[in-house]
Length: 227
Image 1 (cartoon, rainbow, N blue to C red):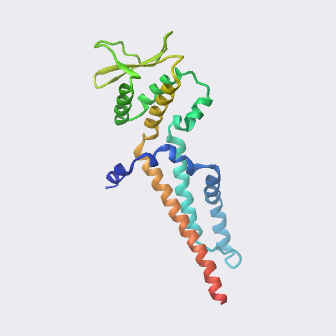
Image 2: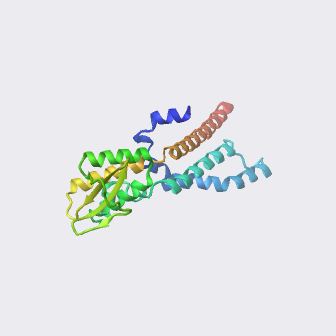
Image 3: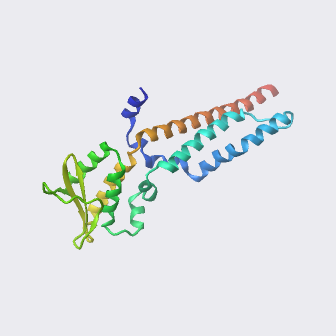
């Protein structure tokens, strides 16, 4: 049931690049700091209950921090390196790569994504004529070949072989479009792991919301008591 639900909702908003905002330093510091200090605070509350009082249950926020810490670790471990390095096309341009470099990125993407992603990638580059089908008995290349006319990678799909080539003087719109095709396949990869990370983040948010509600209720209760 969970898999079917996720399949329907596994669209662009759930992809890797949209997870980055939840792992910014300011958010990470909040959760990790509480995760590390919660045992000390719990000890103080237990040993000095008349002095140290929290307006919420400390262990709820600790559980939220634990869920976030696991999500953070999974994201750091499994988020595709391409997405980390090049979250946008300007970020890719800032690296100063030759247009040829995209063939190497295509090669890494082709070998790193699942079968469904490969089918989409193949269809896109063939439809846009970035890749062409080669003869019946091609010389299959395991990695890109750097030639005078350009960098070429030959890949195989369902018994057919294709060549994708990028020249040094390739047009900017071709380079940009090919970048986004590779980006799209990487950012939509690892759907099961992304589901786990999203569930952990949602759990952390719900638990934090509970502590916020407890905090508000604590203040309101004090106000009512005084009046």
